[in-house]
Length: 447
Image 1 (spheres, rainbow, N blue to C red):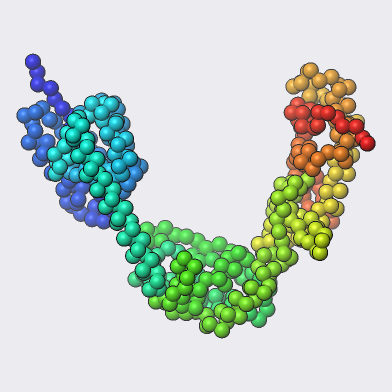
Image 2: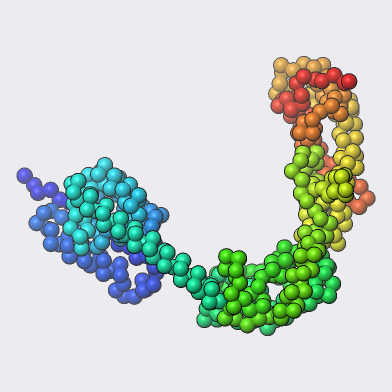
């Protein structure tokens, strides 16, 4: 009887990419030890697979690893009998993930072997021992994570820069923030001009006109991040960032930083007081508040350049006033667009008047009836005309969501210009109303 041959797959892993470019790295060392172990079991019929299952620079805390995925595919395909690793935490540091792996191995009758820890996962004692050791591996991983977090917290409290995108006005050199002369000049100008004339819109409009952008930088991996034109929100973040007075922020607290200040304390205090007393300068210049109440033309109004108008409201005493405001006006100031905002009642009244006029047009109704006849033969011509005309009759008695639903079915886009509006209608809007029964089915009577 021929001796059975057992195909052995070697799996190696290293958490970081450090040292992987060396001629003989950690993965090679793990593989060398596993090859020697397999060779020592030649009498048992062990043969090494030619496939390599290596994961360099991947954490053992999850299973999102290309080498491991390839290994599991081959396990499921029956190409592997024994998996050989240098140490069990090379395969996984998560107890939950390891339990899943053991189930897969058992299902396909695959044995798991650690070169430095003699285990046989086909026995209950072997699995118990593995789970105990893996629990310690997971504990070690969590402990390391806590140490890293503690180190970051301690470094922040000492004012040490801990990486990431540097703020506008600074560059990073040897893990320290170094003032960038050109950018620092822009930051000082932002603070000084706002302190003298606290108009966020005027400041942003001028900076954008000069092409001033947010921070452009290159990551440690060589990835270039291009800055974007300044917005009011970005300037507000600059004004609230204590890094510019030489401080480091961590969890709402400020600590003296290792870097030099760009702004003096008096100028910083002046700007903070202006922001506190005049919050309206930051949030659009008019106390803009977005409304979530049903708005008839939400998502339908646009400027000629394609900028959307969003519904908002403000209050004066007990009264509330609804309006639609251009998104550029919110971000950049009222001079950013020709028509900054419109009273909601007026624009909605104009649109509804035209919409109801369309519903009364015999030519448009006839075209809609012809279209619907091809998709809904169960609706007679007289019935279709009656239903469409009923929308006009009961419009004033519909709920706001019903009116908005009908408007979106009939209108594709409304373009707002200083001299008026133009409405682009849905080409199949009326037939859609009939087909989908968007209008109320009870055909309410006019009171």
